[in-house]
Length: 82
Image (cartoon, rainbow, N blue to C red; front, side, top):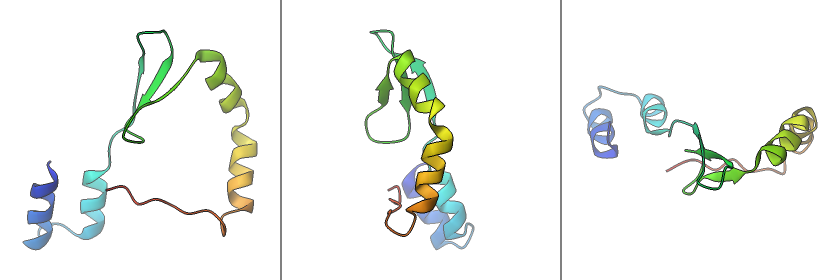
């Protein structure tokens, strides 16, 4: 569904703004890049690309990252996707 179709559905009352937000969210996907790295698409304008070992290091830190976000949530902003 395109952005114009979603906006038209909201204007016609066929969709709530919350449903529109979900409809416009990009789906995340993974693929192997040309250089053999893991590429995460759909998060930002350009893919997030890290090599296998880099992803393993980041994923091993998942509990610390979650705790850090929770401890600093008052200082952190949440970007609303366009």
